[in-house]
Image (cartoon, rainbow, N blue to C red; front, side, top):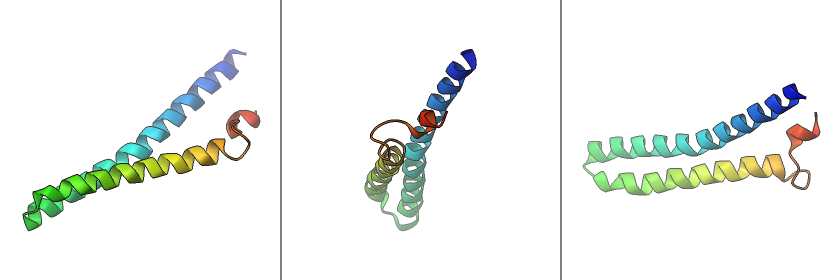
Amino acid sequence: MQVKKNRKVFQALTLILQFGLNMIVPIVMCTLFGTWIGRKYDMLWIVIPLFIMGALAGFTNIFKMAKKIYGQDGGRNNVTKNQ
């Protein structure tokens, strides 16, 4: 019983980590790219639209992942269904 509880905790932590990485990576990459472009071409304002684009890409990634996990079987988690 304790092993199943630990497995569910680790699965939940993994899911949270995946959501976080799917959100943070596009934001950081777009912001760094915007900073580089802004300094190179003297357009420092370009960071703002690229930050927003990264945030939208992150939300899209999270939405697609959540839809894949929860949308296929009527709201139940595929991982817990297979146990």
